[in-house]
Structures are given as structure tokens and as C-alpha cells.
Length: 314
Image (cartoon, rainbow, N blue to C red; front, side, top):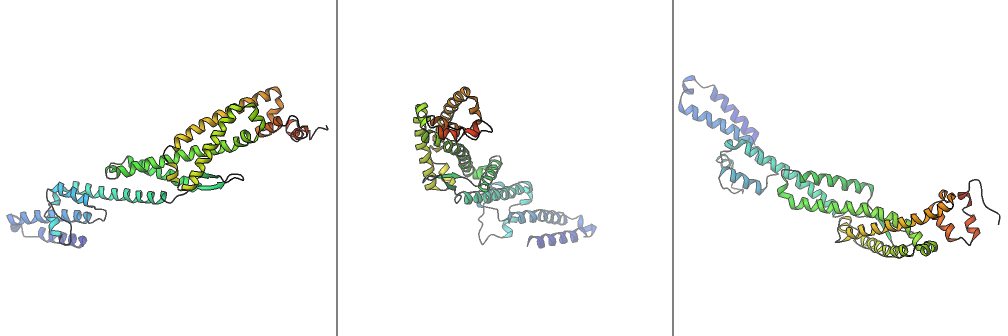
């Protein structure tokens, strides 16, 4: 019990200081006083070294510091520590213990992060009436991702990074992959779902934009394959770090932008010809254009084209 030992040393020192003036002038007194002071300085350091965060690497640092080799086993006693002359290395011993405690916190944080992402899975939802499952991270999981990225970023700037550098940089890359893929996947799914109906379901688009229709057919194959792969893997970290998946998604997003731009230009031409089409949504306008020879179907959209007109009598 270091506290009891320290209290005993203080009591001894108090008794020593109360010695006769004649005794205080002796060499024995001077040596004893020095030894007691050194002992009183050493005990708090011994207490610090008993911290459970101390690992073999930290004891190795202590050996290098003191120049004394020892083995931590059942035979290791207080006397062995006292023989190290710790009072001569107070600041350095404090730094070793502080490093051990900081590294333990980092180690525990890394274990928690690892435990989270080894089990964290995407949330899936069926896409229309197909066998395709759309993917996303729940709001709670996305907040967890941001929190873990921040923790890892702080670790990268820590002076104690070296011990866990490989593990920390690994998590930095893995979590960055999750964030990048989740972000771009959300955008792709939204655009793909919207354009799917137009480029696959609209004969008007197929007729007027054949090159982009062909491009979208390739996009559709790629998106469905990625979504199926994600559904098979389920684990978010593994799925988002599949080799080449982010590059594929970047290319897919670029192609979707080309399709979207071509469609927007085509519809803009039609709206300029008949400005009231500006009041109509893209899907409704395409329905109107693709049913130009079916007045009854166009009539359905008349309230959107002309305010206060429910329909036209044909």
C-alpha cells in the first residue's frame, strides 16, 4: 500500500527533523535525511508505475531510462524498484506513465471502433416491385461514422500515435471509404431511381435521346450489380471498401449527369416552344410528349398546364 508507506516515510522524516541539533550536524544525519527524501520522492512514482495501463513496452522504456535490466514477475519486489533510483528521473518516469495512460485510452477507443464496424450493416429497402434493395446508413449509424472519423483524426495528430499508427491509418482509410461511398451512393440512387422511369419506361425519351438511352442502360446494369453486391455483403465497412467500387461509382455518377443534362436540354426545348410546359413536372411533361397522339391522356394533365381548366371537351 503506497499510501501507508508514504505516510510512514513522512512520519519518519518528521521524527528525523525533530532530532537534536548535535545529531543534525553529523554525517549520518545528512545521509539519512537524503535517503528519506529520495524515498519520499520515489514512492509516488512507484504508485504511478502500478497503473494497469503499463505494458511491456513501457517497462522497456523505464529500463532504457535507468540503465537497469529487470524482469516483471512474481519475484519482483519494491526493493527492485527502489534500486532503480527513480528519484533521479521524476519527470521522465511521469512521462512514461502518462504515455501509458494515453495509449491505453487510444487502445480502448480503437477496440470500440473496431467492434462497431465489424457488425454495422446497411439498412435495406426494396426498390419498387423489383428484387433490388436500395441501401443507406441509418441516421444514428451515420452520426457514429462522423464521430469515429473525428476520433481517428484526433489520434492521427497525437504524439502517441506511433504505437498504433498502422491500426489508426487503417481505420482512417476504412472510414473514409465508408463516408465517400455512402455519400455518392445516396446521390446515385436518387438520380438513378428518377431517371430509370424516364429512360427505360418512356418511349419518347428512347426515341429522342437514343445515345443517352444506351448510356443509361449500361448505368442501370452497373447500379443494380453494386446494389446486389452490397446486399450480399451487408456489412457497411466491407461493402464500401470493395476494390474498385468507389471508382465505378464515380464513373457512374458522371454518366448519370450526362444523361440528366441531355434530358434537361431536350425538355427545355419543348418548354420554350410552349412556355406553359414550365408549370408541368418532368415526368408529366414526358407523359404528355409520349402521348401526343392520345388526346385523352394529355387531357389528364390539362389542370397543370392551364390554371382553372379541368379538361377540354374533345
